Length: 45
Image (cartoon, rainbow, N blue to C red; front, side, top):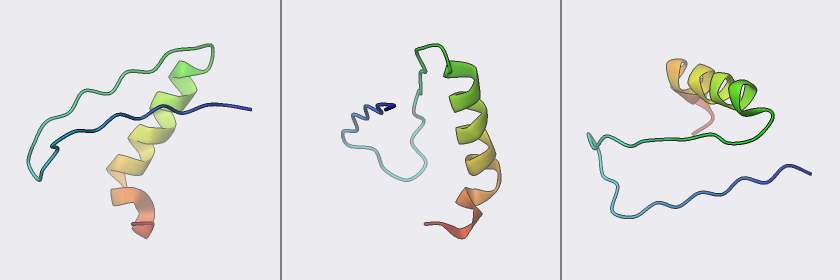
């Protein structure tokens, strides 16, 4: 089972955020999130 840890505080529109990935599948996870962002989450949110 994969685990995702997310910590967000005071993020508002137009803020920049930094996302880091760790682990053996970090490249795959980064690519998947990048694809979601580029497609505006494909209408999922």
